[in-house]
Length: 288
Ligand code: FAD
Image (tube, rainbow, N blue to C red):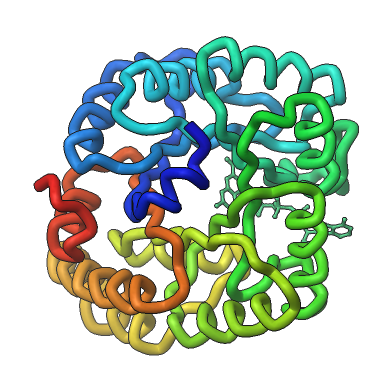
């Protein structure tokens, strides 16, 4: 089923997991997935390692989600490292295991490399190529409430977002964003410029101070002063920091839900407990 149809029928909750490395067992993730299914998400996405790392496990993970039949699998897929032929092979593989939904991305460029290795430089080119060859697929694209770190301005980044919409993307998924104010500013600008696609907000739980700082800064995202204050106040006390971070995210999710969002996508980092507490305390799922 296309995820856009799930969005229409009000499926508000989804999760992201990442595949284990090829030499690691799949079972711990399968156990986590079983627990996540209990929340009746509309879909679960699985990341795709740039340059084909984790490629095998990505397919196994999405196959397992799709075949379990509780929700849709959404596979991330990148321009980075993929030729036209690789894309055609991957589409055939995804289709053969029943996957109908892909998140088409440029991908993270490996450290030291100057440009994308592969036949496509940008996500819009990948979206266009996939849909030319497999029009039945439902394709999502990424968007950046605080602009992509390489874009000169938010306006310029929204121009590029329009290219993804024109290429045939069916919905958008955001980069993490801890600032409601910045999210709302982006939303208004994007809608004004003609971005009409449904937007699913990606939420990264706040778990550890160093993780928070690393993830926000490496993605060019801001740390609002309320979040910076949590690091200052509770940075030395892991439990207190986690509890305060949890409270911040619960409020953030509830504010996002009141804005024009088609759903909330929780980045689980493959940890069940913290995400389960968020689902419960935000009221994101009836199935608790
Ligand atoms: P693009 O849309 O190509 O944009 C990249 C930059 O180029 C932007 O600055 C944009 O403004 C500009 N641009 C876009 N189109 C054009 C154009 N036609 N001409 C000129 N400039 C253009 N990475 C992974 O490797 N694996 C994952 O599984 C993964 N999952 C992600 C999930 C989400 C929800 C998000 C938000 C990101 C994810 N990423 C992942 C990271 C992503 O690959 C990086 O953020 C990457 O740098 C940009 O990807 P994109 O698809 O937005 O690229």
